[in-house]
Length: 202
Image 1 (cartoon, rainbow, N blue to C red):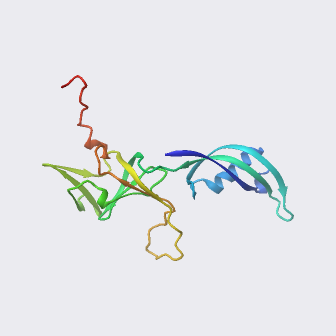
Image 2 (cartoon, rainbow, N blue to C red):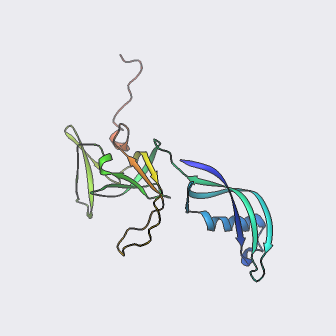
Image 3 (cartoon, one colour):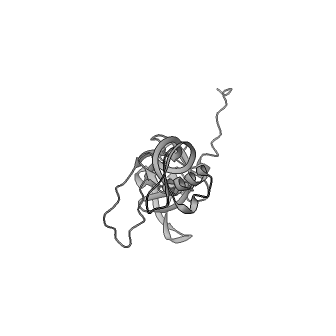
């Protein structure tokens, strides 16, 4: 789910930070540039360390120092087939939206929810729909009562739209699509009652 990647970039340290130790000033600049940003390698979540610093040139009329920096960064980059535990965020007739805390664009579309199921108005939240899985004579509600395990089906990086409607949802530069339609997936409470079979039993 998390990977360590090495990057190289030209970093500008503003005059207000030149009184700081060099590595501290550069790390501060890197955090401003990369943290919570989505690159082609995934979502940047932390600056792991600085490997090398070169330069320190001050451009005429600028006052800032410019450095060529090689550094390592921690990125969120799940792989297809990976099982991840998340929390319920919201749901509608299209499916579920889950959150990892630091990343909230995880979607489970309706076709990837166990069947038979139904989508109905949430009696506790009039602005939301809820999904119910029917298994035999039992019904299991998908809500925020416990963690939800999903398996990654796809990771996409949508292009930035040139035009957006006023009522459009916030743009998501990275979207993870998951499924809960398999044994062991979905709310963990569904499977807590399933005790493992002992090897000693015939």
